[in-house]
Image 1 (cartoon, rainbow, N blue to C red):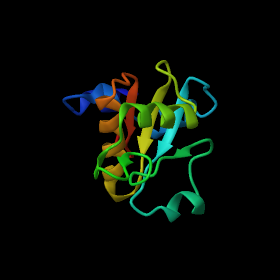
Image 2 (tube, rainbow, N blue to C red):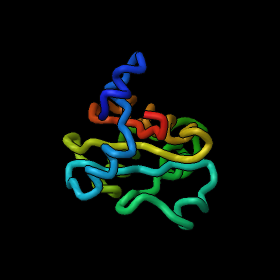
Image 3 (cartoon, rainbow, N blue to C red):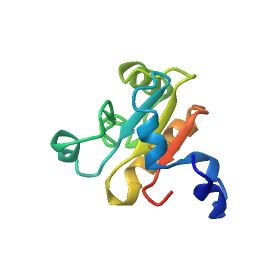
Image 4 (cartoon, rainbow, N blue to C red):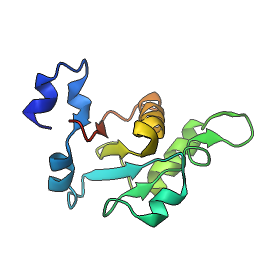
Length: 122
């Protein structure tokens, strides 16, 4: 996080990280970068090195109930993408981070405390 984030007056500026912060933590094993897009082809056409894809429709939603995934589904997702309660997860994506914000919310819903959002404006 940079001073510019804090000085801009964001209500929860502590959850925003800058591009410089992301670059400095690419090799940090305690940080997992997560890309979540509306356009699922974007990840395969190029992504941040080491980032994992979280498909907002398949990974974050129950496929039968038309609701967000269950706790068991969340735990299975976390295991599959290599996160633990101690992992800092940083979300980014297309459409001004719409689906990255949804992913952020789902992780908050299930109590993952170490969540950040990467914004180019931070």
